[in-house]
Amino acid sequence: MTNANIEMITGDPKRAIRTLAWPLIASMILIFINNIIDSIWVAGLGPEPLAALGYITPLFMVLVGFGNGIGAGANSLISRYIGAKKKDEANNAAIHSAIMSVIISIVISIVFLLSLETLLNIMGATSVIEYAMDYGTIIFSLTFVILMPPIFGGAFRAEGDIKRSTIPIAIAAIINMILDPIFIYTLGWGVKGAALATGLAPLMSLILILYWIFVKKDNYLSYDRKYFHHDLKMYKEILVVGIPASLEQLIMAILTILVNYMLTIVSGPIAVAIYTAGWRIISLGLLPAIGVGTAAISVAGVAYGARKYENIKTATRYSAKLGLIASIIVCIILNVFATQIAFIFSYSEASSQLEPLIASFMQLMCLFILYVPFGASAGNVFQGLGKGTTSFILTTIRELILVLLFAYLLGFVFGMGETGIYYGMLLGGFIGSVVAYLYIELYINRLIKGKIEGSKI
Image (cartoon, rainbow, N blue to C red; front, side, top):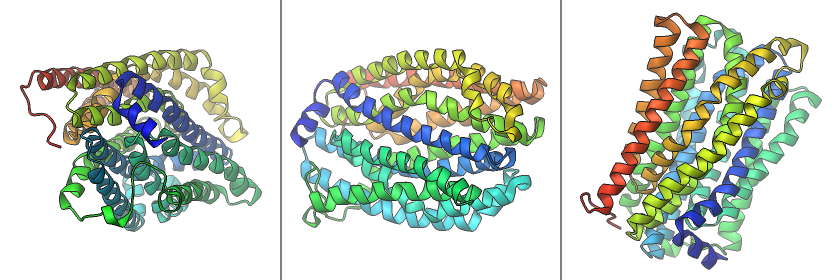
């Protein structure tokens, strides 16, 4: 199986992207369905708990972002070693990423637990601070089980073992869906129950991953101590991609915080609840593009390590094309069934007034989905090449500068209020995605022509 995985990841880039992407998308959809179900159960408690979940969401995104970011860094480095046919170095890189996951888990948990209340007050969550603290304290106490699986998953994806990179994700999502109603309503734990379900579900996934790595030991990469040689350069190489990739998630979290803040000013907590519920559906629609883009990290990394630069161009264009086709289908579905989907967030008497507002939000913001494939393809390919800083800069320009700038201009300067904020997000995101894709095309062409330096591995 491991040889077949390696043959797949080092072969035709289009086939490799398809093979890696669809299971990854399926597992991501399970995660987001789980998140949506989480919101549905919390929505039954009323608008205030749902708004509290909205304030915690960007902070949770930072936590998940660190796991995904370091996982992307491990994926990129290991993929390049595999492409260069340096298996021992790939093993050593995998071990370094595992060590890093433990250290980062401890640090993040301490930092967030000490600063949580202050952060929530800064974000404007004072009216729902008790609910937000109940949820956040539990989540950030269980950082290690949330952060470590995606880091190991990055190593599995690098060797083309898509089953082991996605099965743990699916298990965690399913367990969470089972635990949510039990903890929230049957046991009467409310918001605390939702947090416990979210935090404890990944524990079984982590146990399964550790079993595969340290007991079964039948994957391509080996975590045996004999392959470990402490190398600060490897930490650096992982972090060169991992930190910018993590910071990209931080950028998204900051964007969500600031959008929540702007919405609070123009419309109050109800607007935040609408945005929280509606954006969860939009985020679900983004998954095909994100999944295809994530697959491109491994494919581009292997091609870069093997110095097959034409394959990088193929992977970039194919991932953008595949993501766009899927995104168009998703956008049509969201437009047609917006009212029915919105109902699941407004089924209780306490939140019934949100239904038409959430539906209108989805019908407008589904346009955001259409141009994400281009930005996702560009950013993830740069990560695969070990150019994490470039990916981060492009994301920062798109999300933290252009999206916020136009949201502020249309929402406040031009007095369009809540709707103006949403139009501004669409306009800024479109411009940023086009710029990112044009830049990756230019970079690859220069790489092929030998005008810039290629892989050093």
